[in-house]
Image 1: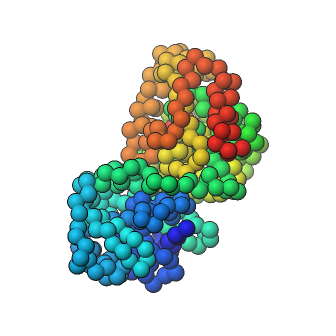
Image 2: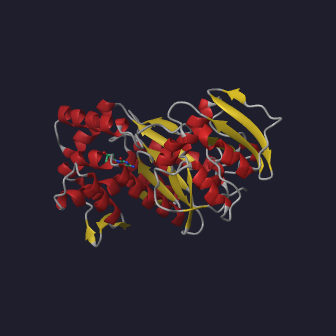
Image 3: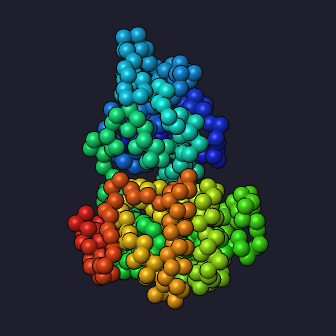
Length: 371
Ligand code: DC
């Protein structure tokens, strides 16, 4: 498998592809890949012809020189909305894409790229997220995934993640806990992490509109899980994070990019340490895009409100209003919005018993060889 490495220098919105290439040229790596080849970096086995490099016209010459490309006899072809040059290089075949339209500029990819830690914690790669990969491939008229790509989690021995995402009140907590127990994986409640950050923010009386203060708190909090309890440092906050004010403020705090980056990093770290059934909003789309089983659990708003109202004793109409507001915030935020992963199995739990839903998910886990 081809690997690329890049020394982590923190998030660099100004990062230029040329700088990255020059850096890579002098480091111990095979090549730099942006685009579908990000999959290779993320641990997918992809055919070498799937190596794409996306750039803009001002960067093209140094990149071609660096790759040793002499394009005299190779014409650029119009491919969807981009120009593409299929090159043979001594690093293998590389497709160069120029001026991919829309938001898919290199800057955009660099800005929103996810750092993925590889093997040693000292090294990481900077690649577009799986969503970028899909968007970019779609922009140039290609399938979402390279043909024959094999998810790393499907390989034997790797820790596995079953991702269970969906809106509030769909039954995620009960179902996720039960599935984890049945298949012997660890249960992870990612919502509890965002709630814990919010609790810390409220307790410190930080200004919830002060992005810097929120970022500092999110990167400093020590969130732990032991015996189904949630801890902030040494303090058991399992009950406190369910308080009404925490529930109300959490969607706002969870929308800060710095908060998401800190939580996603922590979740990915946990996922390297064992096999999990994780519930959340973006587990299958952002945190673990290569999870071998993704479930999107949903139910009608009325059913979800009815369940919450039975649980908390609050009037149904009030619960329904609050739930629709949270759905709106969770689905509308710019980063990691609640959405169905392309390869998720959608399960509507309206009118279904917990047992039948759990049975179905456990059945899928067996079918896919996860357990
Ligand atoms: O699942 P929950 O109700 O405990 O989630 C609390 C809030 O945190 C909810 O507003 C959505 C947000 N959240 C999130 O943004 N990303 C996650 N992975 C999990 C929860």
